Image (tube, rainbow, N blue to C red):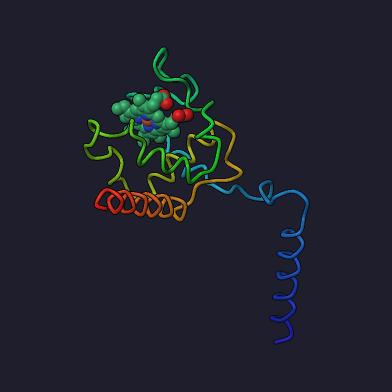
Length: 150
Ligand code: HEC
């Protein structure tokens, strides 16, 4: 009993110390596994590369390298929204969004793959981020429909 307690308190103390450090715990363990980045790379090759080229090179003169994009480097929810609901990612002007039906986890893998290339992985995308982007889009769309009906 005493043994267990001691282990628990040491663990708690260790967590407390790493939680209070000046630098984020990035150096201790990666926030996104290499394996997940590779999944993102494969999904990107299937779904994005056709237009955007590689994140490092782009597909010039039309597509600038995504690695340099402020959207890719910025708030992960804004990036998730851009992937899912950019007007550029739509079939025609009011057709379905190309990636709307892609599952959250795959969007996360793609998002973190491009963020890795943009050196913005210290704030990774999470499944929760994608859920929030979908909710925000759904409520913005519903509000739009409301005001159009008035
Ligand atoms: C059918 C072509 C096409 C495909 C496929 C496509 N995109 Fe795009 N995407 C565009 C166009 C066009 C733009 C607007 C021009 C630009 O930003 O280069 C854009 C813009 C973006 C932007 C915003 C860039 C900025 O800084 O404004 C991001 C991020 C993005 N795409 C990511 C992706 C990802 C990730 C995928 C794969 C899941 C993808 N796109 C697939 C055509 C495409």
